Image 1 (cartoon, protein in one colour):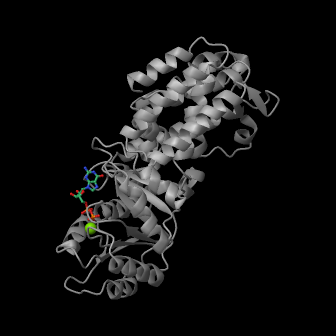
Image 2 (cartoon, protein in one colour):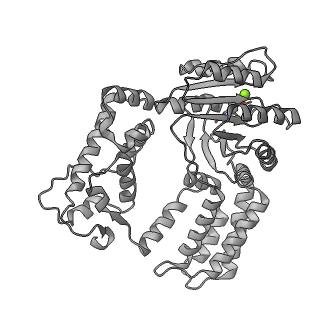
Length: 430
Ligand code: GDP
Ligand code: MG
């Protein structure tokens, strides 16, 4: 938070009824912060209106302070601003990259090919940029690094023809990514060309690549591309710089889509799935809004853990990750566990060591797994372990350790059996 916002929040502390002046002051500070982060003026105004209205009209839930109530509304409205949550499917698909020159399309094409390759998919890339000299070499160099085939025809001026040939040449690719030209302005010619490429390739996704530093022009660019090819996702690049990426939110609003990925550096691995919480934290220049809200929410409705589902035997790696995260929020787990009637079930010393480092390491490893593997870890044998380890940049031993840890958790959770009741309330037991 900017210090202004913090002060405004302080004024709400200790209040038992909602104070209109205090809410207005908070909203004003929030506006200043968002505008500085390049968020579109109209979006900021709409957001302000919603926050004011809801703060004054909605009753704080029982047990929640006025300050927490307002903070929660601010957070929820900010999350709305982030657009749809976009799922990335891990199956055959064609992705068309759109955006102006310099936005980061080619770099991101390389990063995406690496991303899908790590998920075990066969990737192929087509260079349809006939405008920028050296476009093919740039893309080819990136693709060579990760051994992804790159099709291009340097010297050819018909981009549509290149795509047509490329599709034939790369017909074995499961994920086909088409990099396009951008030029500097939105010329009709450029738009006509990308429409033709979209029609020809029957692209499953049309992702708009935007520089985080792009301010109010983001809306116009998005509108133009959206009109032409129906943008269904936004990628924000250069988030490793000082820009906060707020401009891209108007592209999200304009296209009714959401942010798929965020580029965070110049190397091929600097690509992350969009995470609304970290984006919001960065936008506001603070790190703890989400956890503040969560603590408040836990106070009113203590976390319900669905033990039944886990006991039915289906405890996947994905479940494990979710459980670790939600359990972490509840504080020292050992203490909780020691109060449960677990009989003689043995809990390994480190089974619930959910502290930062290990979880982060597990997350990196799980990012290199396919959906199939996350849903059913029993399919993970030697060759897959090797692929996952290479993808995550860790040793095979570490992947094995994660799998072992999952098994231990699974066994431990089976111990909950016989406690009666499918859902139990952990908070009540503490
Ligand atoms: P294109 O014209 O849209 O294809 O853009 P390029 O992919 O050629 O990127 C333009 C410049 O931005 C290059 O110098 C890239 O290295 C740089 N770039 C792209 N993405 C990122 C990023 O996420 N972080 C940083 N720091 N630089 C990036
Ligand atoms: Mg390019």
